[in-house]
Image (cartoon, rainbow, N blue to C red):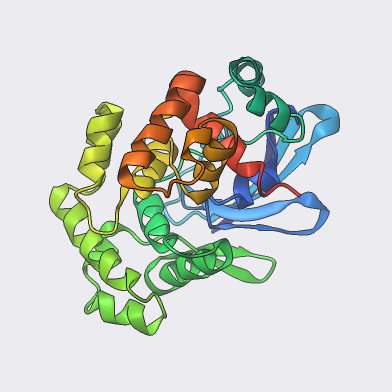
Length: 307
């Protein structure tokens, strides 16, 4: 039985920029369609999202196949969308704080619309960011789409396009010769990383392990993640920030490092990004922007991609 529900949640345009948030390198399951709307998947459902700035609403349509026959209340979908975008986080208030904390943020944020840090499923996030290494958003999106088509479940269709869930840990673990299959799909060296990561995560307890990570302190959770194949410091920080609720986690890539060199730590101008520099720069951002430094970093990151 195919079900469609249309509703909305309160959200001011100063609190959410859909384009920067959904297409800015956090998730790889979204596409912009006509009339500034976006279609993608999360929580096993197909969603169409559109901001209605004139009435301070985020409008959504959700499409799904109700195979169990259970009725999902509208308030539950409202909670899903609110949690996904962390709408309970007062972004305007923290913009004011971050502007006071550093002149660079104050200057940059004048041109930046609201960027939110998504709350994503840990396993999907891990595999997606393993795919992200030495890659671009377009190709990462194609790789994630391939994983879903090959090993996920069909969850419905929109505009004559089928959508699939992200495969579970168990589903990937039972694939015979997963590494070889992914290499044939042009995943390159990431095929081995993904294959090994799936086995290691399953051995650690799978979804139960993720719940344990959420309860750990940031540094301990990051150390745990670093024991998994294909997860280096940046990927671990992305997972901590976007899936484990560690909003002090600051992923440092070459863009964020360059911003630090140009505006915060000029003494690093001629220094290359190394493990030592990574920790120094991350510490600087945390000292500058406080307990939600990872969110401030996401805003600064998007300053380089906003059109």
